Amino acid sequence: GSQFDGAAVHAVFLYEVKTQEFKVSMRSNGPVDVNMVASYFSGGGHVKAAGCTMQGSVYDVINNLTGHIEKQIKEKCCD
Image (tube, rainbow, N blue to C red):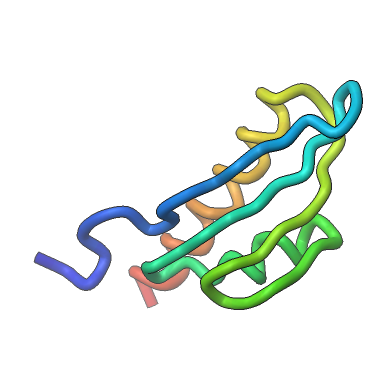
C-alpha cells in the first residue's frame, strides 16, 4: 500500500448557522492539510484541525470542500 491508503480527511462537520450559511469544521489524520482548505475559504486553524464559514446550499459547500481536498491529495501523491 501507499502512504495515502485510508481516509485523507477523517471528519467534516457542517452546522447551518442561518439559511445557506454553514460553519465548517474539518479534522484530518492523513496527507490533507485542512488549514490550507479552510484558509482558501477565509478560515483557518491547524494542519489537522481547521474550520471556516461558507455560503450556499449544503450541496455547494460539500462540492467546494471536496474539490479542494481532492486537489491537495493529487498534488501530494503525484509530486
